[in-house]
Length: 264
View (cartoon, one colour):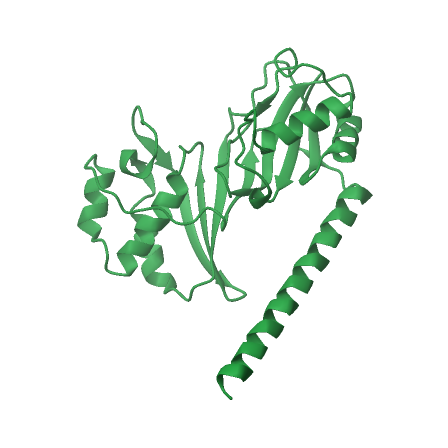
């Protein structure tokens, strides 16, 4: 039986997504959990695949893995969460044997900016990228032909700016290079003509933003997933929220102490 699981993870806990023999990766942790939970034995025989191989430092809320296992989908999700560390499965679907997770209808990435940036100029820059273009200058690997960005939304909420990029597929580093070009445009470091020339096939380097604020929000298919919240996952995430809150409070105390010292 082929099973698809939606998984979430903090990219800072891993050395990238793709399995490596001497590094802890997202795929490596998923395979270890599937083996330990006796869900599958050999990843080749079990057709283990991932929807998106996120770059090092990039997190995910709705990435998808698929495999042929010995358990029903709901049981597979529970067994996976019992054995996994820092990767949480939260939805499942039984899929046909022909299903491949990379053949998605849409991928949705979100980049978080905590800097106070002007939203309207950022939206104008975003519009340059929507549609079919030559994205070679925005990818770290060869591109065989035009690619299409379906939409780029820019919103401001809770003192953060969200850049939401949606497309059927992306290439390595593509979203981070697009965001870098958008920021370069509003800062006067790149012109609209330069970006348009790059999208027409000209070679330009607008740099790349840091990977940590980038999150793969979801990977969409023509069928729904069933959400299943497991107590172990909820407890694990609750502990992490407490830990982050404590770290924030300690950092704020250090700031206060340093401020008091510098002012004395």
